[in-house]
Image 1 (cartoon, rainbow over the protein chains, first blue to last red):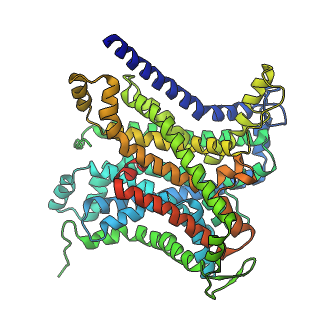
Image 2 (image 1 turned 45 degrees about the vertical axis):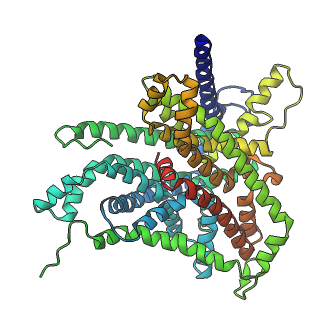
Image 3 (image 1 turned 90 degrees about the vertical axis):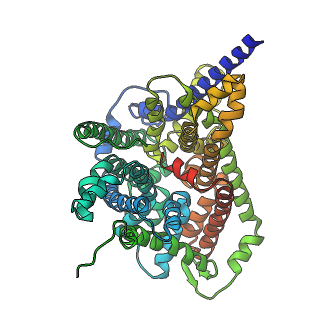
Length: 279
Length: 292
């Protein structure tokens, strides 16, 4: 009896492992297929492969529209990451350290942009600027992206902030440091992982945003995802697979690189600094 | 005399949150309010409407079965996606949590990596798997199992598959976070009192991980029901969801009052589900899930 039960447990565990492997395959199969197909010599986007070729990458490098969209997205994402991180970290600081009326309502409001479908956010802003008779501008697009990224940055910074004991700040303040310099010298360095993490996430959220950008982009402006979407309306070509591969390299490579830098930074920092309280 | 701030002065807090507060008011609260007002505007012709108040848009929405069909289909696809995510997401979350494998972080990282890859690219990459010249069809044709390519793309199944690919990491991370919160001594206690591992799972682990599962289900449902790109790329015209309907009404027909009405409907419907969820579960689990 006991042996049979043990056997059941083993089978359940094997099943779990099997489903897990299937899920990983499911997650990566389409990505791998896209990367492989980008090297296809055939001019049709699909299997079977007819040979290895880099021609689609070469073609991509001379596609002015794609390059313009890439530059646009890059600038928007950099700007979004910088601004969102700044205001997000400061907000998280206020939400964790201070008590003020309406704090609970504000922390709920802050995460709403992550829960409300982008189509609704997209239409809402458009209707608002139509009501006050304003054109769609780049500023609007960037502010919209900041709105979409802010919940994630605040949540990441909040999670980290909770783990930083306030006695360090208080010690600095009691020794005569100003509020600003205690934040700059004590709190911010301890928050660095959240700052870098938040910035990277804000960058990808902006760089990747499709639905809302379709509504908000000024006439004639394409971001990378909207450009891809309009290219897909024609057909799926090897060129688009090559573009996808480049984008995968950019969006996976940058965060991984950032993560590595972060790790070595915290390793350096760990020497000589007060240990934080474990979360 | 110089004014002195106390240590954690609420006035300072308000100054710190001011930028975010302004952003949320002008880009979230105000737009939704104006959109609410727009639902009562009169549609004249493409791109033109007057502020003469009318209930025509609401009347049209409530009586035209065309819209009801879209809403039902959207809710159905959202629910099916969320359920599939729940079933398929629980196993990997549990596996990563329970495994004795030393580099757990690597397994988690592998799940986070797809988050970084452009959503549009992840969606269209399914064409390379399911298309007539995709991996599956070409392999089956070569093996002689089928003689004509199977039509696997541009149907509801493909849309759900694409949404599943987009939302599974959300679910897995949500469940994983709540599993991590379980005190493991509880399970050892259950085992030492004679529970089999299956019983310990059913009586201890599963109930304690339900909040994460519920948060994941809500998140997947809301995000699936609000999707635009996936049905656009992987579905046929018949598989368009509410998001596509809103986009076409505004950007295609330029019927802003109706577009606003549809947006408010989706907002209210999804808000209703979120409200039921918060009523029983509270907001904190969603926060944990989103923060990774």
